[in-house]
Amino acid sequence: MESSFFSRVAQTGLLKLDDRLCVKCGTTIEFLRAETIYWIEADDQYARFYSSTKCHVSRMTISYLEEQLDRSKFIRIHRRAIVNLQHVQEILFKDRKTTYAILDNGTKVRVSHFRKNPFLNALGDIRILESNYESEAKNSRSIRKKLSPSGSLRNLLD
Image 1 (tube, rainbow, N blue to C red):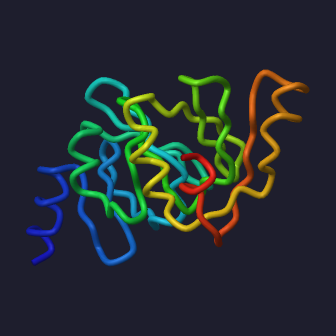
Image 2: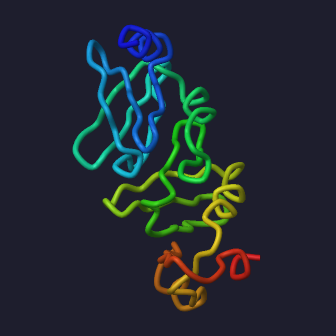
Image 3: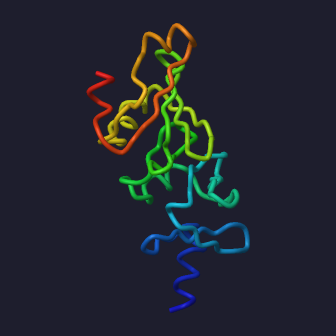
């Protein structure tokens, strides 16, 4: 049984166990809780898992991760990035085509134009706390929106 577990992780690089992910990083297998992962960045055939403690590097593609991860918690927002929806704190609208997800650790991750609507839909029931577009647009070329767990973002953006 033990060898079966390790061989599955060795073959795929990733194994899901309840609320944890077993990620093969070099010669070790690391157990990461899904809620501690802020985002995942693609780097050719490697993936960098940015967690609350450190960056973990594993040899797997972001397409494979997108298929394996829980879609209610993780979403691909760029060809090179997957974010944990639980850690999205703000959305920054620089201009019509440039959008960033600001994570609660301060990381700014670009949202591609193609993936913006699916990302906003995946956020689901949230409210924009600061929704004064005109005054912010006059003070800055970017519009920053803070998110809270209730309300609806879709109504304000449509």
